[in-house]
Image (cartoon, rainbow, N blue to C red; front, top):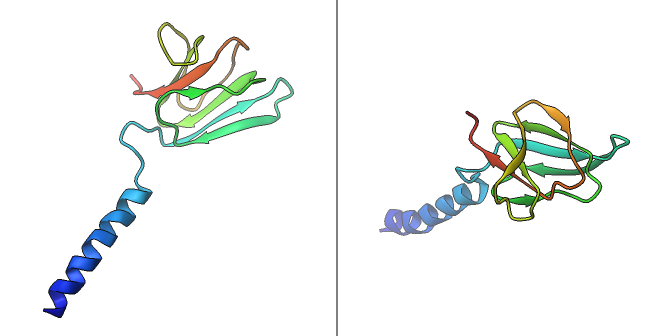
Length: 106
């Protein structure tokens, strides 16, 4: 009886711990870092997922994730894609770019 009570308590707790530390399946693993024109770090996004805002003043982006990063003119990641930065690449970006999203590498 004690065993079944302990199992009933511990199983949900273990599942909650796993869910709290899991990265969503569509998330990139790694970091996307934005820099100013003086190459000062402006913002870093760890394990980004979905559409994210590009910080004001960003002049370059370093993609240290396992996904390709697509950049957009609008704030909600609607096409067209204006720039693609592959994993391991750093590139300058226009100050008109408003959003980015990790996508599957091809």
